[in-house]
Structure formats: C-alpha cells, structure tokens
Length: 548
Ligand SMILES: Cc1cc2nc3c(=O)[nH]c(=O)nc-3n(C[C@H](O)[C@H](O)[C@H](O)COP(=O)(O)OP(=O)(O)OC[C@H]3O[C@@H](n4cnc5c(N)ncnc54)[C@H](O)[C@@H]3O)c2cc1C
Image 1 (tube, rainbow, N blue to C red):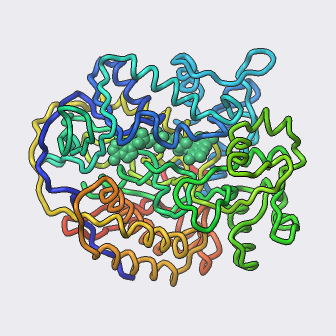
Image 2: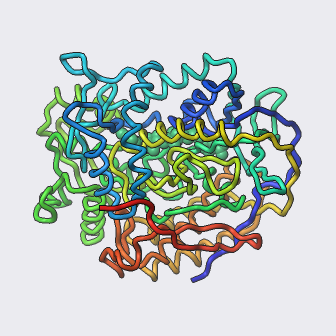
Image 3: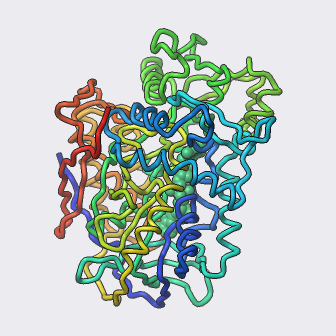
C-alpha cells in the first residue's frame, strides 16, 4: 500500500512575538475550559488559546446529554459494564473505571460552576436513557441543548477568572519541543488580536491539548468547521503516540440536505427513535425490521451499516425517518432544537418524513494518553475528543464523551502539578510541509467513498494512493484553511493506514472483506508514531486492565 511521507512541521516561519504562562490550554470546549478552571484552583497562570470564538467547538452542539451514575438505582459498576460492552473488547478497563467512578462528582462540580440541568418533579436531576445504557443515567439541559448550556456555564466561569488569559482566533500550528524531547509550548497564528498578531510562540512547561475531533476529514459530519484534528496532527508531527484512529463513529440519522451539502450537517438524535420514530426505505418499508432484535434502537453502528447497505442497493442518497407519530407536543417539548433545525429547512417533522443518511460523528482514537492525560511527550497532555484515553475502545457509548472531557481534564491538572518543571524554550527546525486547501474536497471524497462507513483492502489501498498523490501536490501561501487541510491530510493518512492493517470488523470499524470480529488476532490498540524521516511506525499495544 502507498503511504505518503509526512512532514514534521507545519510552518518554518519565525515567531514574531512570545507569550508565557504556567500552563497553555489549546481549545475551549468542555475539556479545555475545565482544564483551565482547574489549573487556576492550583494557582497556575493559564493561557487559553482557541482558534475561533471561545464558544466554538463540538461541545455547544451536543444534544442528548452527559452520562453518569447519579441516581440511587444506578452504580459506577453498571456504567462500567455498559461502556465495556459498547467498546467491543477494546476499552482499557482501568480508564473506564476512572471515568465512571469520578464521573458523578465531576458532573456535580459542573452544576456548582453554574450549569443548569433539567430536573424532575421532585427537583432531582432528570435522567433519561440512550442506546446501550441499561439504566437511566443521561443528564440533559434545555431538552436537547445540553452542550450549549455546559458551554455557557464554563465560558462564563473562565471569563470571570483574571488569571486566565484567553486569545481567540489563535490557531495552534506546531508543538515546540526542547532538546530533551519535552514540550515547551506551541507556535500560533493569531488573526487580529492587537500586539499578538501573525505567527507567535506561546511558551509553558505544560501544554494541554483539548482541540476536539476531526469530523472534517469526511465530506459530511455533525462536527463544526473547527473540528479539523489539529491537536492530533501536531502531536503526530512532534513524534507523540497516536492510537485507534480507525475507530470513527458514524451517526445513522443525520439530516440529508442534498447532494452538494458539505461540512457540518444537522443531527437528528437517536432519542427521536427512542420516542418511537422509525426508519423507512425509499419504498416506505420499515428498514430495520428483521435486521436486529432492537430494530430501530439497535446499536448505532448496526443501524448506520444497514442504512448504507440499503442506500447502495437502491441507489438512493438517503433514507427516511418517520417521526410523525410523536405529535406536535412531544416534538416541541423533547426536541425543540431538532424541530427548529427541520423547520428552518422547510421540513415539518410533525407532518413530513425527514431525509436522513449516516455521517461522521465522533472519533474514539487520538493522542494516546495514560490515566492522567499524559501523552508520550513529557509536558504534553491531552483531554476530550482529541485524546485516546482508552475509555471508548472500538465504539463510544452514547453521552460518554462529554463526561470523558470533564473527568480527564480534572485529572490532568492533578498530575501536572506534580510534573511541572520550568524549562527554557529552544528553537526547533526542519522544513514545513504545507498543502493547499484546494485538495480538501477531493480528499474528503476519497475518505467518504473509500474509508468511510464500509471499507475493504482494495478501497483502502486506493485511498492511500490518492492521499499520497494529494500530499505531493505542493504548498501554497499559508492560511488557516491550508494549515487545517494539511492536518486533515495527515490524520486521513494515519486513519487509512490503521484501517488497512486491522483486518477484522469491530465496533465502528467495518471491513467488508473481514466481516467478523477476531479477538485472537486483533484485540489490540494500533499505535503510530512519526519517525524522524517522516514515515509512520506502527506497533500493537495490548488492551489495559482486566476485561469481561
Ligand atoms: C452534533 C453533536 C452532538 C453531540 N451530542 C453529544 C451528547 O449528547 N453527549 C456527549 O457526550 N457527546 C456528544 N457529542 C460529542 C461531544 O460533543 C464532543 O465529543 C465533546 O464536546 C468534545 O469536547 P472537546 O472539549 O474535546 O472538544 P470541542 O468541544 O470540539 O472543542 C475543541 C476546541 O478546540 C479548538 N481548536 C481546535 N483546533 C485548534 C487549534 N489548532 N488551535 C486552537 N484551538 C483549536 C476549537 O475551536 C474548540 O474550541 C456530540 C457532538 C456533536 C457534534
């Protein structure tokens, strides 16, 4: 298989300015904002850099809620069980244990910070259930606007803290690493922030990456435009371990907006099917009937795969979601955001069918960390969707991702306080490898068709060759879009590389030529590091902790 050599650096430009703090946090979703607040509890100065406005990111789009064993009928052990089942043998047991035992306190702390969750008649947090959970343990806010409320509360708290300097429109480019191989900051490109404009360096002995996922690798995704995997790509270039990129979750019911729609697409939460909505094929037949005992509430991967197959058989670009039986009141009270999303696009789900198709939604892999969020480079930490802590294994359990960001951001700061040592910054060198943003759309088409929901050795070999070809297309004048596209290209290259190696079907990774799960051979994480000469070096790592 052809695999491109990847560059070790995004820009060779000299920084025009320097900023310093005890801790740099890159990204302002649930993970970055929590890490910044926590670092302040320990009296550290924090520089929070974020590439758009402070409230941009996947967090504010989260609909369903956040999972935690908050009720007396529930327990962390049961949450652990459900998470391990969803992860199909690839979760790191010890990481999941941390998630589920520290989760309830982390959610309570979020409430203390000011997040207002929906409550039941007794005033207790209202808990609901989602696919894969055997207990009611999903806390939600504003019906289906949980992420917006969490983001609002955290942003307000961060903005009130004078020890946190926030730089918006600041795109982190590369990790700065000293001669001893430790992180010492990041280079940034800042647009329109007074003295801090253009290329600069933010220096600190601790860098926390909280840059979110990489949905924009694919043509259609539920992720916002900022989800270009920059944190994974800059860690890869710096030589950090990157794991499990082949496990990309595709959400089965994303509103289909026409053949030319690209980028972020509106999600129709599976809670709508939970209330009774069903999927129909183009001839109006119930699509999931006979395919799984749970029919429309089968696991996400099963439903997405069934939809893709039916679309291929029928040559149609979407199927239908019928939620007319829910009635106007349920739509209005339970799903106000989704209702509005539909109506602004001329679809009234009370009377109309909703066109839906699978689209990229979440990535389980990322920067490999230990249980304290430490990456394989000293001084580098990662939390939230950018990280691979091992809690999701081969498939994420619904509503565990907000929780992961919250729990591991808290842990990082505890670890970092012990780890912190001052180091003087040094220069790093090497050529850059900037690609032009003009390759983004052709690259997404390659990923959609050849490395998306259904994969095979042939499609992946073809994808690798196309990516190598696109990677040789040369540079252009640096811009945010070029830097992001270069990051997307590097992530796509590792994703395809992993997907080709893993000759089995497990969780969200589906090989048409290897349709079975193979525990004897493949119950391992794939971990990749970029060598000095720009080639990918991949090893297998055993799953951590005891498994059921
Ligand atoms: C539509 C939708 C619905 C979802 N629903 C749920 C749900 O109900 N429950 C659940 O648990 N999960 C849900 N998820 C997933 C969940 O929202 C995310 O996994 C989670 O919010 C990720 O948080 P984060 O802090 O890691 O990243 P994000 O919230 O994505 O934040 C990343 C931040 O990093 C910044 N950034 C990125 N690159 C750079 C760079 N180079 N330089 C500087 N800044 C950078 C971004 O601007 C942003 O501020 C949903 C996701 C989507 C898209």
